[in-house]
Length: 144
Ligand SMILES: [Zn+2]
Ligand SMILES: [Zn+2]
Image (cartoon, rainbow, N blue to C red; front, side, top):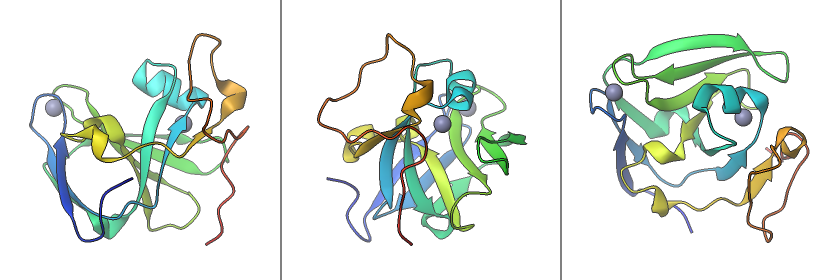
């Protein structure tokens, strides 16, 4: 299940100041439990969608925050300066044309479904995950 090839789905932040359109298909959808996702979202994990940068058409200008990610490379998180709603992340990730969209910012987040749980080593004891999903201690190995 996911966004069909060529299909367009919309999303945006809580207040609506920033809107976007994604063209499918997504590369992957995962639950990420890393410490930075916990701090950035205030939750146990965040649900992320991998996209090529040219698949995201953003309207409005997000604020950004950059720090060093788990891998040592810089990671930039893009969010609405008005409502704080998280939108997407770019950085030194495998494949420099990749970005990570926050699945909950889609108008209909049910268009995707997670295929894995990553950074289990940081997961909090009270978070729950689908027992059928493959789980990885850190990044999910991917062939490119
Ligand atoms: Zn907003
Ligand atoms: Zn994370």
